[in-house]
Image (cartoon, rainbow, N blue to C red):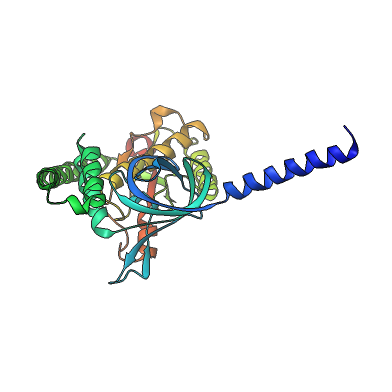
Length: 308
């Protein structure tokens, strides 16, 4: 191939690459219902594209419109992106079925409905969400769908009852957990640490990892010590989600103590998940919520061993 032909081929390849890159960065907006939430991605069922995978990163904004016309927006934790929630996603196309989200918005009433479905923990959740989408997109046929609407209302009512029962179970669990830890009255505290977390996250920061290693180093020098770990959440999201998140935080701290700090399993008490219970600050402010997103770690020593 001559030099001229080679230049033509190179030019065509460069053009194709530019087109592909432009397509990859194409701005896109989709609306639909979240059907699945897994780690850093959510699956959204849309009318135009079917199932779309939405990828979240540190720059993704999760917002709820405020006021009558919705110009002002309230920033929310990504923890509110639960199955059954109707959302609008602005982002860039990664391929035909994947979008990198820049912003995700939703209506407060849709969030309340999704929370009722999620807290109910019933297998009808996805069915209710799908029916809601059909009702929203077929408003012109709403009279013909009266039977479906009535069925959905019955499902929502049932989920409200299930939510109340689930909340009662969570409260009972918090009471039992508090009782279990309060029975450690024959122990003295020889070290303690509060590990803080970002909103909706169970990841331990580098700074807190270093603090945990220091706490563990001091603990293993003691005779007969045990380590107590209790996880907490702020009031963002619903009670069921926060209960689960507080457990994940406590479990991650215990895993770090065992795997990275060489603390024997027998020296660690089973984690306590306190959910929204026992806040140390007001959940009405961002600073207060940050204080409440924590795991309390205590090194305890039996008084009989320590001679107290």
